[in-house]
Length: 314
Length: 254
Image (cartoon, rainbow over all chains, first blue to last red):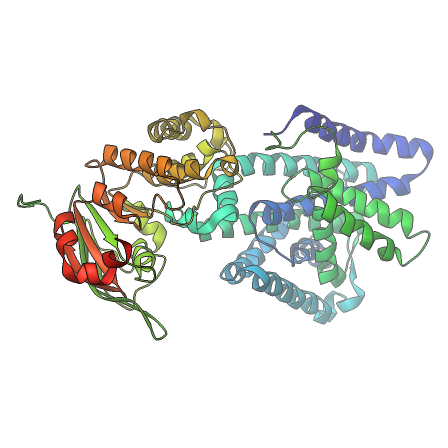
């Protein structure tokens, strides 16, 4: 299903990510370690969105909702001086699951453009909710402390946090890979391919799609949890529709429906933003046409440009 | 067909009605499929044949009427629930999973009837409890050698065979076949008829068909549908001799 050259690209990619901390600290360029950490967090978000876009046929334009939910779980608990990382983590997951369940339950009754617009609208509601919460900083955002894991792991050390994030990236990619090839994954992919047929052969597809929607939300909630720890600052901007669009672009750039591609998509997008925005703040003017070309000529994005063949080429 | 039938019919439809706005799709339709028989439904374009299949399979909700399948009223059930009870359908317009391999298409049907699918870990396409029975069915319909081909790369006739294989793989008590030979050339068509003859008796079938040769070759009974209404039901020879049918339908073809 996936060939060796692609697996090698992936392993090389993870290996490079793994050696970034010693290299950047050797060079005294810790800033780049922070950038790489940020890339990995968005890679997690992008992989989780690809589960919906590329495997479930669910065009969610509101994936930032869970990024925000996960990060606010950290910030709000931290605001009340609850810095227990385990608790924060489970609240982040639980809250993301609940919100995904509600949004999914509503949106999955619609199709096509309606699905896109409702996910967008509901996520904007969360964004405005964030703005209206004056107690937690409103639109100024709120500072937060890093999660504490009491002797098990000291996240106040940037390198530890970096490997903590890398661990979650690998875990998320691996679990997602198992999932899309499992029976559950077959049902979700089958209903993307032909939902009427799935029902005709006996699958109650709604519940499986809803479960996939919640799983994707939870994974992105974990990305939010990590993001709050990295930036030590949470703002409603994390839930803005523009952020949802960015995650979607990362999936498109990386290759929709390739699962691993979005990891490269997130890296490419943030790298591009970093490099070009030093030249001009209107970097989107340059990025826009590149995106169009990529979508037109490389349907599976960066992933298809890596060595190796795609499934179904033969 | 003169033998007294002791068993209850597998499918019993009574007083089925469906209107789309002012258009009558099904009008006060009574219909039965006996255990083990092939009951064909014929009729000119727009007679409501495909609507009828959709109503029985649960994809369209009729306005009124009762559908009793295997002794139970199923009119209120969803399509997937009906499939779980043993009602399988094939589609007039080929409806397969194009970006999956042939065997994965069939394994999907097997999986649908092998408990819930909230199983997240083991690879589905390496699971012998799905793959082995899927391969058996593919061998049976004559697609055994094409198992690893992408479904989208199959020839039209092969896609129609796959369509039937997916329905068979659900382990049905009744097959609803919506124009199984649609768009097929004469040779493929003949193969399909031979295959359906071969499995006749194993499954009860409701056969929607446009092609008269196919109908008369396969059916035990035929119902003629015109504007949603059954104008005649009988054996092939009775239907052939029915004046009203000739006027409404056969006349234009023969």
